Image (cartoon, rainbow, N blue to C red; front, top):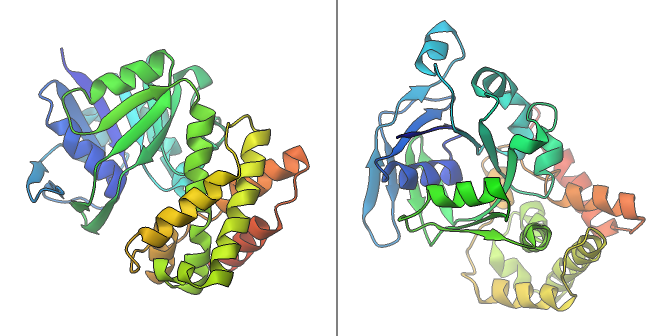
Length: 300
């Protein structure tokens, strides 16, 4: 019996996960995208490629509704966090009483972001760590291994089973709060690169490295208030790793700003500020980063 999945947003992350899912014959995958493309091709780290031609939906009309007829077992939402509202019409059309919805996005507010459209019992937040970049519609380069983590509940176990036999390291976590906040801590200092439009080598300047540490220490303090088990030493661990990384490496915030695209500043550093306000924890470095990045958002 096939498993029907609709994936909204075949960008670098969504497209890579889709390509791995298509390698399983029991998966019946439909891609929902703004821009159609002839095939999905994901270059693998070993030089091989995953190629698939799943059905596509680009507009929500009578014809697409007929194509999508029947209940979906899963909906994967892999659009940027700021595009969440744009998925609402698709969710309304495709969501059935037993459809499970996996939110594959940055940040820690997956449940809050989709609460207006998805019942809590059907929603699964997903943490993904997958180095990949989209070079053109339907063309993606995966640069390293993919890792996804989900809560250790019934939805989480069902999600993990979808990737059985694929190279994706999918697993449940008994402490998903810590998993999400650790990833956000790693992401938080990327705001500096986006503001400076400078790659990893910017952290080689001691004053910039201290600023990165300050942003992460705020994030860790808020994370602990949220129930995550993180200590301050994590900031130094992340900073040391960043300094050993390729000096010309570019994070997604930096890449989006350089390309004139919208940035996920609110879902990342902004989430730290909002949680800090709830707990009475000052977050001036994250607040400054969020304020400046939001001021730099493209206006068209």
